Image 1: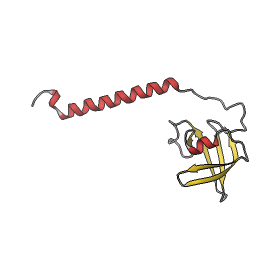
Image 2: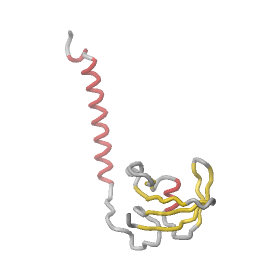
Image 3: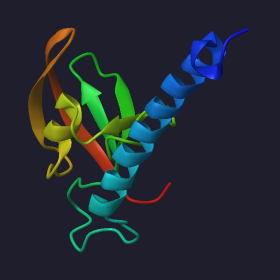
Image 4: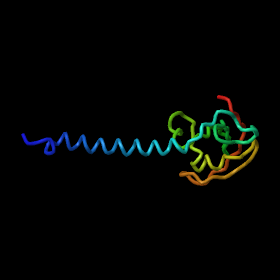
Length: 119
C-alpha cells in the first residue's frame, strides 16, 4: 500500500489545493483594488461605467450594451467590459456621437442612439 505520499489521489489533492490557494490569493489582491460604484455619474449625458448604451451600425441595426468591469462582462447578455475595444470606444461618448472601432470582424462604424443608467 505505501504511505500517503505515494498515493495518486493524495498527490492530485495536494496539487488541486495549491491551485485553489493561488486563486484565493489572486482574488484577495483584486478585492483590495476594487471600488463599488453605487450611483450614476454627475454627467448622465455621457457613457461611463454602468451605463446602458444603445448603438446603431451602418445597416441600421441597434444593439444595447452595458459597460461593466472586466470581472462582470460575461454574466449577462449585453454586458461588455470597459476594457474591450468596444467598451473603450464607448466611454465618454454622448448621444449622436459617431465612432469607429476595430473589432475581430473588422473596422466598424457606430452611432450612439441612447444612454441610460437605469435597467
